[in-house]
Amino acid sequence: MRIERFRAPGTRTALAHARLSLGEDVVLVQTRFLEEGGADTVEILAATPDTIDDLRRRLQEGRSLPTTPWLAKSRRPTVVSIVGPSGVGKTTALMKMALHESAFGRKRVGLLTLDTEKVAAVEQLSAYAELSGLPFEVAYHADELKEIWYRLRGCAVVLVDTPGRLPTNAEGETSNWLSTLRAIRPDEVHLAVPVTLRPECVRAIGEQWGPCWPTHAIPTRIDEGGAAWEDVVGLVHELGLPPRWVSAGPEVPGVLEPAAARILSDLGLDVVREEVTS
View 1 (tube, one colour):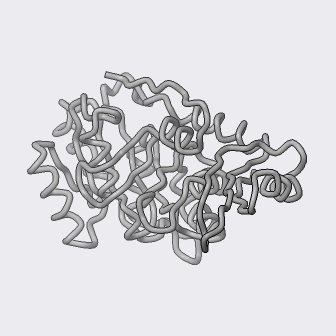
View 2: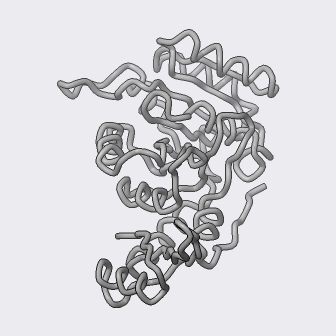
């Protein structure tokens, strides 16, 4: 799965470079005309056919919102968790999901954090919850969950924030917060990863957070300098997880966009029509 940029004095030369690198059946995604040093330059974005097919498939997989809790008889709300390293924008993305209509903003949303080791983390999400008028709970241990679900019984969706600390140690022992997350059994687990990371770093994060059983990727920091949409494609490929949303900017509610429409449109491909669940 490859998508690359090529620059040359003319379109034919740029396309020839693309075919040499990616094969004769290369797909031309975008063409831009630049001026560098007083000379006209053509930049093309090209991909292999399997890249485009795989991208569409993964984006299609990530579009449907969860509608039925895993255990219907419990009348438990739908539960979605965000996991990932510290500083990647988990809490910001979680609040965007809570407030944006393209995510869960039309539903009654509750917030739950497992990040109990950093006081600032609890205070940050508590402040967001208070400002947004959303119920907020903190879980220190799995045995508290029964009472927490009772207090959140009026919510249709509960979003779960987690620590940036690794879910297992060097000996493979499970952390307390991961034990609590597994007891929660979320309907979905979204792994937040910045698109600015190198592929080997993305792969490492995918392996380190594998014990959380992630179901989706959520690309973050797409607005930072140097980030390009082919980086998002590479991230999706490296993680092997479908994205539903992409997150940009540190502001709340800020930017949270449906992944399929944004990625495909910015790559110049036909857009899959988005469906918003009320």
